[in-house]
Image (tube, rainbow, N blue to C red):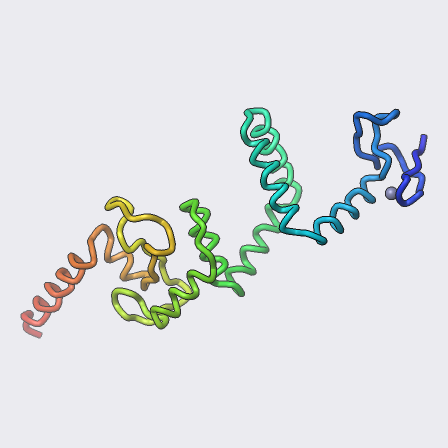
Length: 196
Ligand SMILES: [Zn+2]
């Protein structure tokens, strides 16, 4: 038995209608496609409002065990239904074309803080594209580093980050900048003493 959508006026199969508790047949008056089109339009009319609304709804649903389970199930379903592949493509395009956006996302999701692409770009510009410790020219493999180590109470926010040459960052390890400079001086003076 077909059902007529009161929006587009087309007769469609019941599966093409969403559920609605307080309607006679338990189905929505509008077909799923009409609802979707309406929601897209509504969202585009005031994106900030609806983004905030959905953020609050997600937050509320996360506050219960059942809600968390439901969200995890939906996320898994989306992931299996192609989001995984789309995400891969998206990240690859970020890596290639939007370096700072890519790195900001990495940092933000790793440390659960909000660092923007603009922050990282400004930092790069303030460092004139040079490693903050060695002055070597930064490339796309540059590392983001905590200025004050987390172990010493440093935070993850944008005021405690700098760009480093990757080798410099690895060499630094757990040393402070002062310790590292002393090490470099030892290396220099020892090398100078070794007969060539
Ligand atoms: Zn319709």
